[in-house]
Image (cartoon, rainbow, N blue to C red; front, side):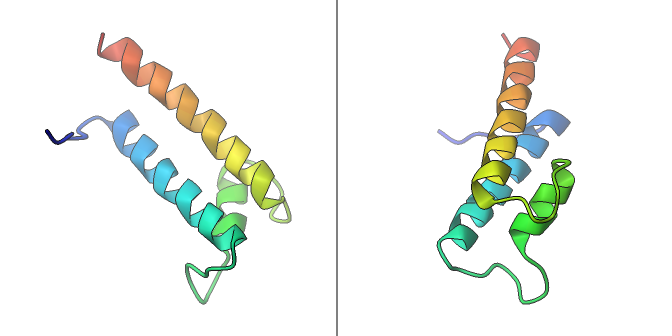
Length: 77
């Protein structure tokens, strides 16, 4: 069985999950892009300083993902 994401909140959740995965991999030493650090981009998006540590960025992403998940669950009982 496959899952189809059709709501804006579901799409945002999937995007944040991919971003969290990229930050985790970057913290292990893998690069996502030559141009910028994914951690810096995610930190700015989450309202943190660009110099925030990967663990802080991942925690902020997880918090936002949990908020979206509860919102989606409330909409679809």
